[in-house]
Amino acid sequence: MKKFILPVAIVMIGATSALASNVNKSSSKVPLNGYAFRPAEVIKCIDSHVVCDTEGTVMCTADLGNGPEQLFQKISDTSCPNSLFVRP
View (tube, rainbow, N blue to C red):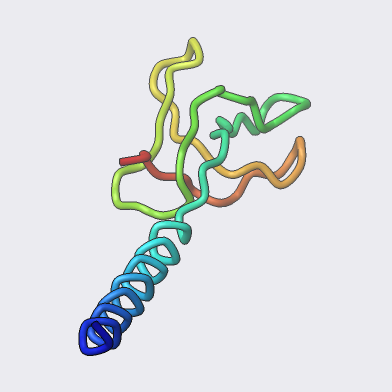
């Protein structure tokens, strides 16, 4: 019985650390509401109510009445400089 305990423990430790590293990788993406930037308006960052990610390859967009617009991360009502990406 003792011969099985050590190998099983080693396998469990390995599986746990593999799962922990995968959780860490997937948490590098942060879901955020995307904001359309409209420089001519008083409140320049308009909430699209579309959830995007901070990392990716395809730009997050939404149609808020003016055709498709690229979405950004909001810093303040007048600043939304960081591009957001489509959630997989």
